[in-house]
Image (cartoon, rainbow, N blue to C red; front, side):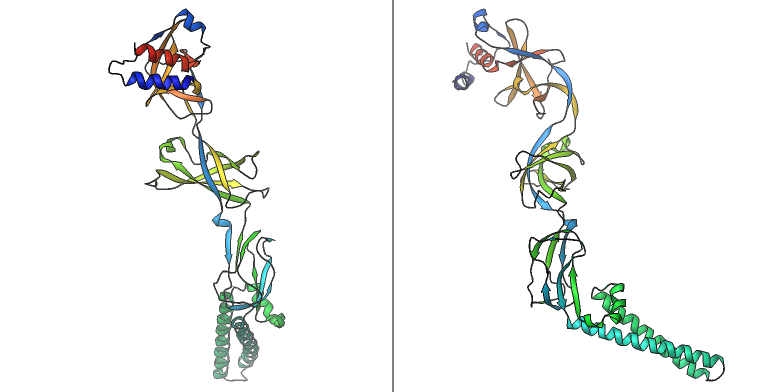
Length: 370
């Protein structure tokens, strides 16, 4: 009921042509006896603002991988599906590729011919040194060897382009039963977010077969108000809460801020890195974020000491046992239970009212309308 009376008084009196706010308020002994007032002394404090933001958990794109074959192939065996946890180096699927088989066969042919020309070159070189064969025979044999080596190098490069490592290439000669077969391997430990293939399916080179994500750390994308950028610094600590774990907070660090403010929302994109070693969080979760801003030293009062009339901010200074002076002030962003305050008549040690503001405001407005 008191709030309704104050609002009524404010609009009724302020819009009256003769209304002027009183410079000070002096209560009678009876009025003071009916009030429960508390005061506090203004002091200089160091505190940090806390920005309340919302965001969404995202996969760290540096730890997300699309896995695709380098050559066309047919899926022979599907080893994992969506939601499976995989290790780094684990086989995801086995495939058969005619193109790979042909490249391996060409490599084996080039390797056989190279070994032959190498042996022949060594034999002819010894005979030429002993004067048994003419130099023209040696030069021809050496030329054939050089050509065979070039062909082998080319065959090795083509196999490398199919995704085979040098160790795998060297093993082809020892394991000819595996010709034309290859595997898709996970490059990271994580979760299979998407598996787009089935056994027997033909998949083209470059076509994504799996998406595997390491979620040991996640990103939280937030929109930081442009008006609050002076309070924010890269590296700031954040506390992140999600609905799935209402009693817990997860520590994060503000890793980066965008380079351009959105014209419509007047916000700047920010990215928070969040550790997820317990594997509790998942991409796509909505989050409530408390971002710790830059600390500052200033005069501060409890937030309960401040009141508003229109777009102006006031506090009541206690000037005596029954005297109270409304002071026009400027305030900064709230820092927990405290708020920075500035004004001409303010200084450390000044006493202001923190309880009973509504009643004092009512008396002041009424007094101004008399």
